[in-house]
Structure formats: structure tokens, C-alpha cells
Length: 528
Image 1 (cartoon, rainbow, N blue to C red):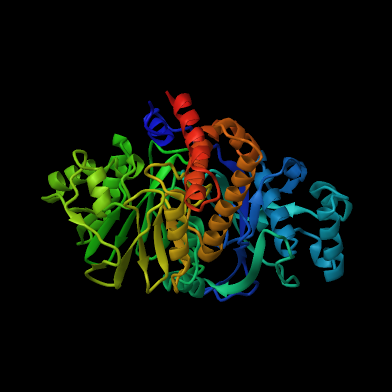
Image 2: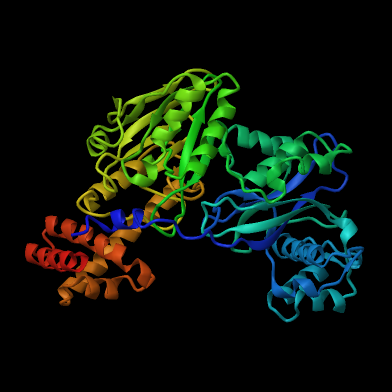
């Protein structure tokens, strides 16, 4: 008999191919007559309702549309560049009301609002609107400052062209009420970068790079400084610092879809580094992670220890490789720390040198102060740990909450009641500003996300209970009635989740033990 869907998936071989990035454009809009030593930039906060980078600060922009290429661009002989400039101008207009086109200076505020309404109501296409009102896009108004590709951990990925532009003197940007954006404001580059440094704002890597670049002033080599990093030339971002001193380093793993990568975290001070979940079993990924660690070590730090959130293979696959590297290049391996139950699970695979108990505090030496309080949060795995930084509100959530999709609760290792209790405990933390999950990007709206997870599980449970009471007893019958929003490819995992729900419902006295046993027997027969 197969041990579990998770074991089968993780041993199946290569992970799915990365989703192809979609073309997109963004505008780094500078205020007219801005201070060249401390320029002001218009940034927006993305809605908490969005699937991708919800709650993050970014620049106005979006995905390329088919007819963007139809708009003529003056002073541009490159068709691809012309299409992306058109995309950037359209998105800026749609999201902020700023019309960056020659001739727009003749329009009143009301006329620009009328044009925007025509575009949003699809009475005119973008190219038709420009032609009808005698407006012209000119490449000289857009300065290309890089192409960034979304890191490989996200199911939605973009190849985004960034352009610097100056806001026309008679126009004032504002968030137009688009559901994708929550707010927008002018802010000095230094203050915006300062908010990130104070852990008050989450920004994706290209935005952080832009703010840091602009904070140094609008010198003659501004474009050169924008393009000075490899990531600005479409090289994948590996080292992602969503918060100061918290590096997220996604590594390719044999994990469960839709994920293709597991996040390893390197948390550091001026003196020490804590490595959490070096999960990849692939040599090239292990080498990339080791190189990132080398960069931090070259600045005079030491690795304090390797910490594991739980025992699943996609979180522990690179432990021995990293320790071998530290032993050969830096003079010695480091201790591996995990919960006692994780240590039992890994006995004979990986030596766990130190057990972390609930409420233990991991304190790193050096500045800035980093203290992580350990929380034993079982449910996804018996020995699952989360780590809370009470000063900044960051929570390393492991696989309890992830950056996209849901979490598999797979008995007997998984337990639905314990999982819901763990989510509620996480929800009760008094200072929670960001979740760093085991997969996907950081989560900027932690309380809302945890509430969403809890509601989702309870809604599933109600539907499963109704299905059982209506006579469904086999895995296929229950999943067919309840998981109508799930791809058939994921039905095997859904059947395991149903078993976890049935175990809880049985404990609650809401289904008969025989119902759960009949379902379990049917599931075992299918898995043989």
C-alpha cells in the first residue's frame, strides 16, 4: 500500500515546469520639479484581495494587452519596446489617471476623466482613443531602466519592463478606484526606502532596488545605476529580502503542485546567520544556496545553526549538503535544530542535534536585535514549528500558511483539529505584520489570510458533512460533490484532505465511526 499522496508526489521525480512569465510594464513616476537630491515618486499599495503580491507597495503597471502594439510610438524603431511603452502608458492612465501623451496638456481634468471612462467602458480601444483625441506617445518620455522576471516560487510570473517618467505639470495622479489598488501617494524615495528599513512596508525586489537607487539622487549615471544589477537584465532573482535581515531564497524541490520551489530563509545580524529549511535535493540548487551563505559569511558572520520547521522532504533535502559545504569551506558543520517529534521522524536520515520546544526563544548575537519565539503548531506535521519575531511582527509560518494555494492535511501525519487550533493560535499573536511561508511570496495581510484559511477549512467541512448525510461514502463521491473548484489532477490530494476532515467530524460526534472507516477502506483499496 502507498504510504500517502505526499510521499508519492515527492518521490515522483522532477517538479512541473515553471509557468512562463507574461509580459508586463510599470512606470516609476517622478514628480514634476522634484528635488534631484531626494526625488519624489508615486507608489501604490496593492489590494489585499489580489492573489499576487496583495498588500505590497509597487509602481503603477500591469500586463501587456494584445492591442497595445497598435498604438504608434514616436522616436522608437523597436516594435517590442514600442508595445511595452504603450502598455506602460495605458496602465499608468488606467490606474492613476495620468495621461503621459503629447497633446494631453490641452485637456482639462474633466476631459481626461471622460477619456478614462471611454477606455474602461471599452467604448474605445487604447489606440483608438489616442488617435481620436489627437494624442501621441513618444519614446522620449519613457526611460527604460530594466526588465525584471518574477522569482520562480510564484504560480503567476511576469517579465516586467520598468520605465522612468516625469508626471506632467498639470496632472495629479490618484488611485482611480480600481479594485487592484488600495491607495497611492507621492513619497520621497528616501522616506519610502526608510519605511522598508523600519519594516513598515513590503516591496518586491525591483521596487526595492528602484527606491534605493532613487534615494541616492538623480545623478547623471542614474540609468546606469538602475541597470547595474544582473536582475535588471532578466536574470532570476534568487536572494529576496522582503524585510531587512530576512532573506528568502527559493530552491527547486520535489514538492506538491502548484508549488515548484520551497523557501529557505537566511535570517542574519551583523554577527550570525540562522538558516531555516534548506530543502532542495538538487545539486545546482544546493550550490546556489551555499553561494548565498558564502556572501553573508564573507562579511564576518558565522552560521549559528540550521533550523527545520518540519520533517517533510521538500524542507530538509539540502541539510547535509549545506553542512558538507560549511565543513569543507568554512571549517566546520553546524548543529541542526528541530522539534522533538521532527527529530523522531528524521531518525536515521538526518541527525537533529538540538530540540526546540514550544515557547523557546532563538536569539541571534549582533545588531539588529533578532529574537524568534518558537511555536509548536502541529496539524500539517506533528513536529511543525513556526517562529515569531515579536519586535517586527514577522512570522516564519512554514507550511501552515503559504504564499499561494492551500495546505495539504494528510493523515496520519496530518490532523485537521490540530491544524485549525494552530491557525487560531497564530491568529491570536498580538503583533503580526507579515507571514513568511514555506512556499510562495511573503503575505502582507497576515490576519486576513489566516482568517481566510480557517473559513476555507470550515466551509469544506460543512460541505463534506452534508455530502456524507446525503449518502456519499466513497472518496470519489465526496470529492465530486465538495471539490468542484479543484482540478481533477488534484483529486487524489483532496481525498486525503477529506479523510482528515472525517476524522475530526467523527471526534466531534457528527459522523459515525463506520462512515469514516468505510471511506478509509475505500481509499486504501484505491491506493494499493
